[in-house]
Image (cartoon, rainbow, N blue to C red; front, side, top):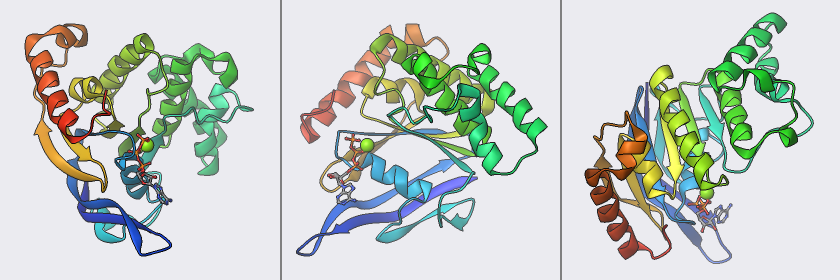
Length: 255
Ligand SMILES: Nc1ncnc2c1ncn2[C@@H]1O[C@H](COP(=O)(O)OP(=O)(O)OP(=O)(O)O)[C@@H](O)[C@H]1O
Ligand SMILES: [Mg+2]
C-alpha cells in the first residue's frame, strides 16, 4: 500500500481569479510508515488531510492510494480530528460501533470488535460512558478506537492532541507510538508541534504557508523506545533546535 501525492495543487475561487492554498505537494507513505506533516496555522495542513480523505479534490495533480485515484472518502482511511468529534448522545461503545453498524456488520461481530478496540485504546471499562463523562484524552482515544474499528490501512490524524494539556498530550503521544508499533498501520500525522513530529514520525515534511508547499523533508532515525529519555537526549534537543530555527525563518508563529 502506498499513498502518493503527485504535484498536488489546490486553489479556491475568489471574486477575482483564485487563491492558491497548496502548491505542488509531493510525498508518499509506504505501508507501515509513520509520516508527519509539520506546519504553522494556515499553512494548508487540514487541506492536505481533506484531499487525502477524499472530502475535496485537487485542482491539479493527483492522489493515488493502493494504485487507485482517491475518488472520495473510504473505510481504507480512518480519520481523527483535533476537536472532539464523538457523537455526544452515544456512549463510548456506541461511538466505536457506529461506523461498523453503517457498514452493515453482523451485530455479534460489531460487539466483539467494539470490545476489542476499546481494549486496544485502554478503555475497556469506559464503553458505557457518555463523551461528557470522559476526559479529553479519553475522548480522543475513543475517537482513535472508532477510526481503527473500520480497519483502515491508513490513519489520518489532524492535530489529534492539540486540544489536550501538556501532560495528557505527552501520554497520548506515547500511546500513539505504541499503537503504531503494535498495529503496523500507516500513519499521516498533521501537527504544528515540532516535538510531536520528531518524537513520533519516521519522516517529516515541513509545510510553509501562502501557498502551502513542502520546503523540507527529513528522515528521523531516533531510537523512540524510551520516549521520556528521548525528549531529554542531546541529539533530540539539537535536532529540535535546528528545526525550530529553520521554521522561525519561514514563519514566526510556530511553537
Ligand atoms: N473552502 C475554503 N475557501 C477558501 N479558503 C480556504 C478554504 N478552506 C481553507 N481555506 C484557506 O486555506 C488556508 C489553509 O487552511 P488549512 O485549514 O488547510 O490550514 P491548517 O494548516 O490546517 O491551519 P490550522 O493549523 O489552523 O488548522 C487558510 O488560509 C484558509 O483560510
Ligand atoms: Mg488545520
